[in-house]
Length: 80
Image 1 (cartoon, rainbow, N blue to C red):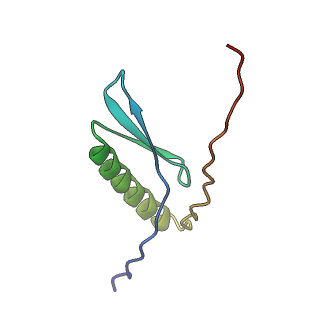
Image 2 (image 1 turned 30 degrees about the vertical axis):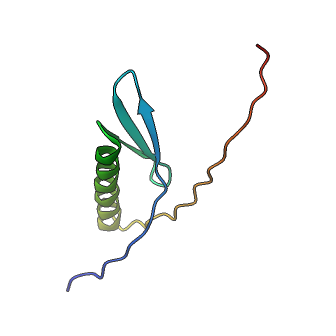
């Protein structure tokens, strides 16, 4: 019997690397990273990576972690 589908969102952080001319996505809840040449590609690669990791976790009897990421912006004062 097929398992029902369950949608779960994950926060991803995308960073552009201008020197390498690509993008990196980090998925904090799963501690995974993906790369892509465009934002669209890195999103798709991150989505695929998340799906593969969740499938692997379920096969190993692990639970899917909640996305408990806290995103903050820190301001730092510096002397120039």
